Length: 328
Ligand code: SF4
Image 1 (spheres, protein in one colour):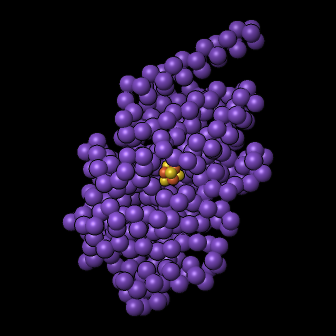
Image 2 (cartoon, helix red, strand yellow):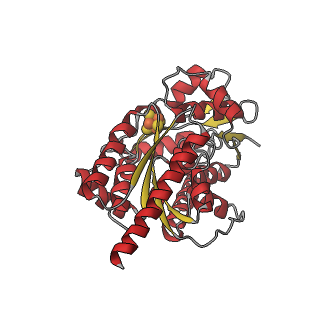
Image 3 (tube, protein in one colour):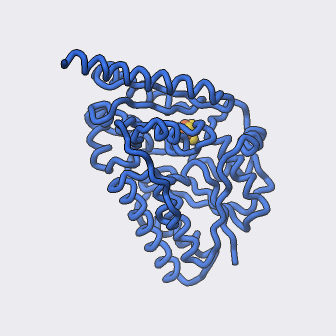
C-alpha cells in the first residue's frame, strides 16, 4: 500500500480529517509525524535561516521526521481558499522551500490551491493529484466528496460542540477525549492553529488554562458568519487568510462573554505583528476585557510563559473581586 506522510504542523490542524479521508479513499495509508519535541524542532531549525518564523522551522522538523516513513509527503501550496483573501507567502512556497532545504524528502505531492482561478482549476488540480493513485476519475471524485464531508463534520464538531481541533480529530478517530473539571469562566485564545495547538511550542497553554479550570475558547469555535461580521466591524474586511481567525476572533471575544483574551504570536511573523496590533488597539479602545499578547519563539522558556500566564489569571481574579466589591 502507498504511504502518504502528513506533517503535524501548519495546515494539519485545519485540514487533517479532509486530507486523511481523501488519501484513504484512494487506497493509500496515511502516516502522520509525531507531536513536536525539542529534538524535532532543532532538526527543522538547522535546515533554515535563523530569522525564518517558528512554525516554518517546526514544519521542516516534521518533514524530516517523515523521511523513510512514507512514499510521498503531501505539501499543498495554498494561495487562497476565499476570493481575494490570500495566505502568507510561506504557504505559497511551502513545497518549493521543502524541496530546497530537505533534498532527502520523499517525493512531494504538491497541489496549487487558488480559489480566485475558479472551481474548474481546483477540480483539475484535485484530479491531477488523484491520478498518482488511480486512473479512475470516479474514484477520485468519490474520495474528494467524502473528504469534503469529513471537513464539514470536523468544522461542525468545533463550532457546535466547542471542541478544539485536536479534540475534534480525536473524536473523529473515536479516541476518548478527557473529561474536564467544571470551568469557572472562559478565556479566549487567539492566533494561528499551529501555535495554539502545538503543545511543545506553546508550552501546554491550553492544558494549563484547563487545569486552572478555565474553559478555553478559540477561533475555530466561531462560525464563518461570526468571524466575518467581527472582522467587517473592526477593519472593514479581511485581506490575509488568518485575519478572520486572529483579528475577527479577537474582536468577537473582546466584545464580551470571556474573562480575558490571550493573543499568541510567532516571533518572525510579519502578518501576526500587524494583526495582533489591531486586536491590542481594539482591547484598549473597548477597555472591557483584559488582553495579553504572548510571543513564542524557539528559545521561549517555559518558566516565562507560566509566569506571564499566572500573572494574567491573577489580574483577572483581582479584577473580578474588585467588581464584586463595587457592586456590593
Ligand atoms: S503567517 Fe506568520 S507564522 Fe504563519 S507561516 Fe506565515 S510568517 Fe509564519
